[in-house]
Length: 296
Image 1 (cartoon, rainbow, N blue to C red):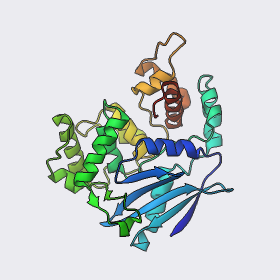
Image 2: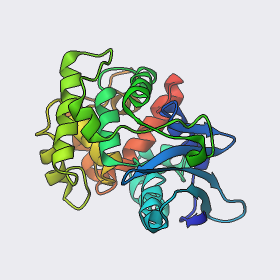
Image 3: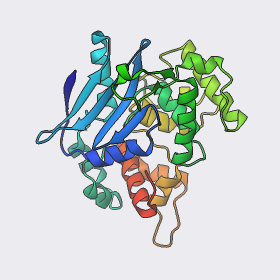
């Protein structure tokens, strides 16, 4: 099936692909030739999606392979969430450009979006894996996790022999020892998260206020403020989520001497960016990555 997914221009497709490419899990995701592909799993059925940008129109093109036609609306909804297709960039940009430091960042990237996650559980696991390590190291751990505990995907299901596994189901992660090269406390956090989601599949669902979502996330072992805000930003699509303690955000607002604001100072300044702090964070990450040569 081929589906057009429309959006409000401008849309920075290269930036979106760059973000997803830096975080692509081997065997489950692939970014090449201006296209993003991944294995998807819903209700035990496995398939794949490939997304490209349409030419001469404000839309993305999704090529979907899935054996259960009735799941198409769910797949489309998730794709719109991943690629942030409901945003109104003009309104968001006008608001954020009131800040003199943010204004040139927004002007340089007016089509920047806030990438979402395919699944709340998957995004939460990614966030925990990424605590206090580089993006590259986190993706290495995620690749090992998917290879060892993910659901095998046949080429006939995905259309690409390089897409070999779907993300592990919470039930599998909750019941397994998870032999991963990481601190035991973090392994326990992953298993606790998996157990909690297995018991309550709506645990990481949307529909709560940001404050309620953060409070609930922080009850999970190993989930602090930064992780909770990041999960809310990408997994729950909270436009006002803001992980103020993120080093990249503080680095982007360093003064001419290199002095960075504290998390508390950044949080205070971010009050003026409400209700679009997640988009401000995206611009700060992009500016920080440009300055350091690292992926945002």
